[in-house]
Image 1 (cartoon, rainbow, N blue to C red):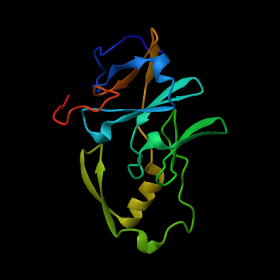
Image 2: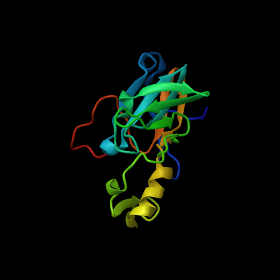
Image 3: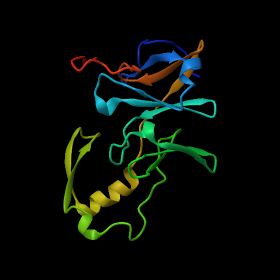
Image 4: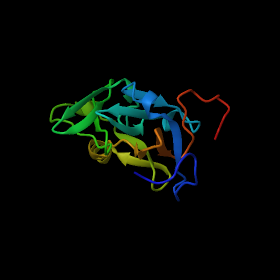
Length: 174
């Protein structure tokens, strides 16, 4: 459990501990959507499963599905959430997906001849031929997970932006 509380100074990446609410209330639901003023893509799911809290990006890395609406299952000791759109699964602790493309699961005509992807390292769009794109996609699906801590009966999530259980006004940017 990390030290600190509330919205104290963050780390070099800009993340700070964000107070979400009392653990006694948050543990009443299996998943809660936490809204971010940084935009729809920065929203976070707070899961409560088997007496533990977990936090990860709310939109599926595969196709943007709402993970808070997904099924949660345990397989071989691994807690996973399954996206309700295409059944991609993600480990609640690591964010890694165990979903792979099986041979024959796609038709070659369904693969685009090229694709543009945003590269977080280069901070720009990159152009990939279909084969490179397809191999990247197979191994790339990973959800961003966030540290969660309990302190004085409250739940905190380490995140770059403020988080709220209620949507932020459309014009708020911080």
